[in-house]
Length: 130
Image (cartoon, rainbow, N blue to C red):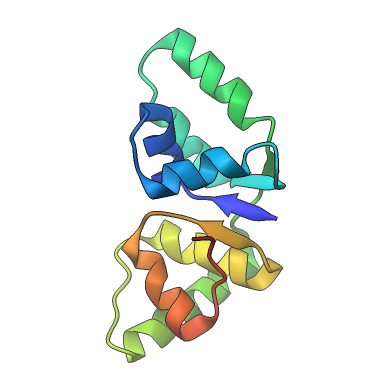
């Protein structure tokens, strides 16, 4: 299963011409895709128009919705953050630590367009889609 990050969904919904958007477009209907509950909130919070909100909500709720957090993931995410900090890397957003950790723990592949995930791939084995 592939978890798709908000960095991809936002560009996809805006019609941005970019490789990660093309990759998502190719995966839709071909692969089992998921969205995290917090990613779902991030994406929907950015939709201004009511009609567009309802259409986007309908589209995203067709995907499997993965619960990203919880006690065990929070603890593991903090551990991952500390490991990366030991490598001289500081992750800018807690949510990215949680997303990457959920993917690592559950063996989900991640489609993203956010450099904060790169250290998780390099040092912690995050499997990403390119």
